[in-house]
Image 1 (tube, helix red, strand yellow):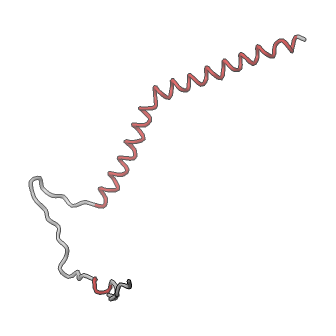
Image 2 (image 1 turned 90 degrees about the vertical axis):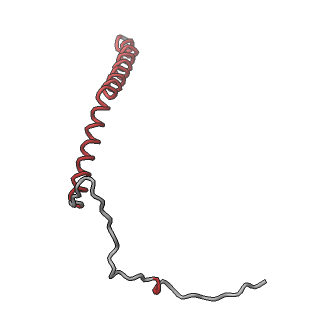
Length: 91
């Protein structure tokens, strides 16, 4: 009989602990979430900048204008696109 009466009290205690842990985790995430997110974004940004920096190493002095042009030896390959087919409309 004594074990039977302790059942509802243990259930309420367990429910209270679960709610307490839930709200504690929610509070901690609100508190440290922006900091952790900022650190992750900074890490990804540094990685992207290092990869982009390795690809493009040309330096241009400030105030100079640079115009990149297509080389003259590149020919258009529109002739190899396909064949023109003439057609007539049928009423």
